[in-house]
Every structure is written in structure tokens, then in C-alpha cells.
Length: 266
Image: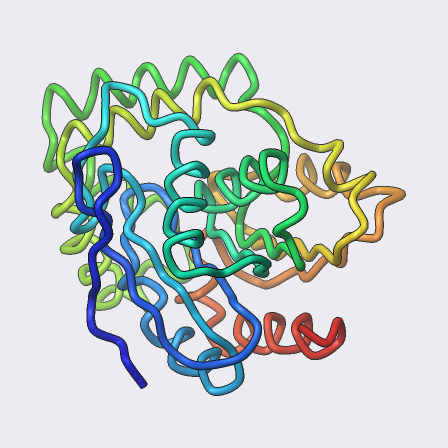
């Protein structure tokens, strides 16, 4: 299985990605302060029956920044360019947190390319005014003390009961997060702050959808986020953990994805 990091030239920067396995294409989109390494364990399993594409999003991992703001549409256009380069016409998208926002932006821009969407610890809803204010505070905080901001941000993604149990895993996530450049962090925060509400996609699109949420998610309040899928055909998976289900609920997260892919013959 080819898992070496490849690069694709896009708008004068190099986009880092991997392409492994054969079958229906799955595009895995990481979240804020993450990079494609977050998918390492899941990718190995998913690539046994699928063609799996992982991408370092703009301003993250080994992919450089494009501007002061990376909108979700900017990110989606970049993903589209990678898929066009790989001659992939249709794919299922799995997005963690910010990656879910990008998956929905992609689905709005390129609906004919979507086979299915899994939102992992993510939401179709736009930022509330309070969340927008918090994004501005985060931008000020990271400019003031980059390292303290990144380390605290990562710790706060895990449910309280898991912060001690998973302390070594959390340190590894922090190490990867600290590779994210300041400009990449600011551009992502600005982009998430202005993203559109895309709840309509959960109601009126024909392809299968799944929402995986953590019951103790400190970032996305569970009760606030289940209302978006009422009267939709979106399947809900509820896990006993925080915002980092792929670490906190590793086996259940993989099983949910495999179940989704098998159920819908993807």
C-alpha cells in the first residue's frame, strides 16, 4: 500500500497528500490544528477495501498558506483540484471538525461528486455570534503566545475524563499541532468564523450522511447539534467522549465508518 506523502502544485504552493488502496474513493479531511497524520490508523483500515486520499489542508501540515483567510470554499476548491489531478470523479468525504465544514462546502460547490458524507465531531451550523467572538479572542491569544494557545487548545478538545487516561496521546497531538504555522492558525480561524450555514444540505441531498458526535464534547455542545438532523435521513452515532473521537473512541469510530460504507455499498 502506497502511503508516502505526495505533492501537487496548486496556485504556486505544494499541497501534501497521500493516495493508498483501491476501490471507492474516500477523502479524509482533518480538523483545525491537525494534519493528515491524524488519519494514520484509520487510513490503514479503510484502505483495505477503499482508495483513501488524505490531504494536508491549507496552512496545515506540509501544505503552505495561500492568504490571510482560508475560507471553507478555498479549502474545498483545493481538494477539488487534487481530485481532478487524481482523476477521481466521485468520492465519499469524511471530515473531522473543520474538515467537516470543508466537506460540506465541497458538497455545495461540487454536488455531482459526492457519494456520501461523514461529519466526525463536526456540524453543518454556522458560528453563533458568541463563537465568532471566541474566534477573534483565539486569534488575539495565538498572536500573543503561540505555544500556550496551541497546547491549551488541544487539551480542551478532550473530555475531562479522558485527559489523564490519554495524556501520552494528547502530547503527541500537541506535538503535531505545534507544527502548524501561526498564519495557518489565523487563516483557519478567520475562515471558520465566516463559514455559511449548510444545514440545508442535511435535509435536501440524496446521498447518505452520518453525524458522529461525542456526548461530552467541550467544543460542540451535544444537545445543540442534534437538532440539525431532525427530519433528515442523516444517521447519528453518539459516542461517550469529547471532540477527538478518533482517539477517545478509536474502535467505535472506525466501526461506525465501516458500517456506513458497507450499508450504503460505498
